Amino acid sequence: MNPAPSVEITGLLKAWAGGDRVALERLTPLVYAELRRMAGRYMAKERPGNSLQATALVNEAFLRLVEVDNVRWEDRAHFFAVSAQMMRRILVDAARARGSEKRGGAIVKVDLNQSVDAMPDRGSQLVALDEALDALARLDPRKAKVVEMRFFGGLSVEETANVLNISAQSVMRDWKLARAWLMREMGK
Figure (tube, rainbow, N blue to C red):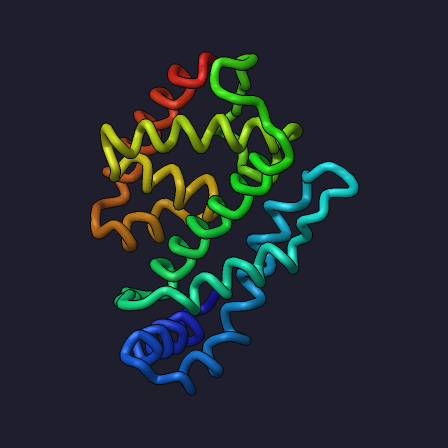
């Protein structure tokens, strides 16, 4: 995305956070396409016949975003990081609802070097990753946020650093350590 729309999106996010409903109306078409692309990546590898479609995922995430009160949007990257978190919750809830394995079941392998959309058996893997990520968040919330933003949100190192207000080097260090910890935690 080029700088002009990013600046425009940031301004509209801040106006919306300040209570300007017209800003939300102007913001929606600017962010909807990117949210749809994110959702499309998530849904690309879902099994055939899945009742949750990309449009439904983006609509549900957007509805949840609109309902959030007292958020002070920092910028475009912050908005998409929160969007990624909401999509993660929706996908994990859907995977659990489909009868994913309970704790103590078979070990599930997740390759954290690939993106979430490249996972072949996403349902059980998303649940296992979600549980491991929650455990990591209890130990080190920042590392868990880095994984969430990079893996689920598709944010770059620079965008993640901007959202978390840390250096790109810190993001890479957290990313490497978090991946190693998650792989160990998940039995890989």
